[in-house]
Length: 110
Image 1 (tube, rainbow, N blue to C red):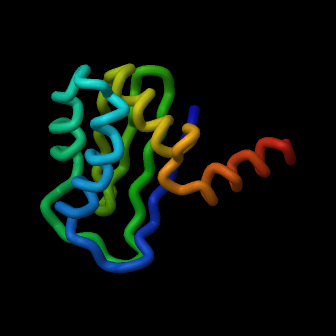
Image 2: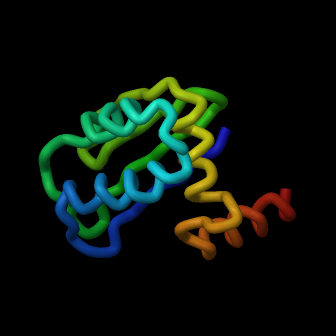
């Protein structure tokens, strides 16, 4: 499984957070299974994120297990969604190249 974790380095509205994730996912999903983006929105309660807030995702095959910033748990079952999420974090055009580099370094040390 892959387990990206997002830790906020500043306060941010939940709308901006979810919009940024969806903006990164949608083109990678190529018009397929877009209802899973709405499911993702619903996994995040309507409270703004504060510095230090953490969200954790565990991606295993077609399943995303998600822990939101207030500790709520949820899941999305969609291969299109999980592939897009993996591409966001681990693909050629990863949104956080330093995250990808850190993961690759860690794999080499195993």
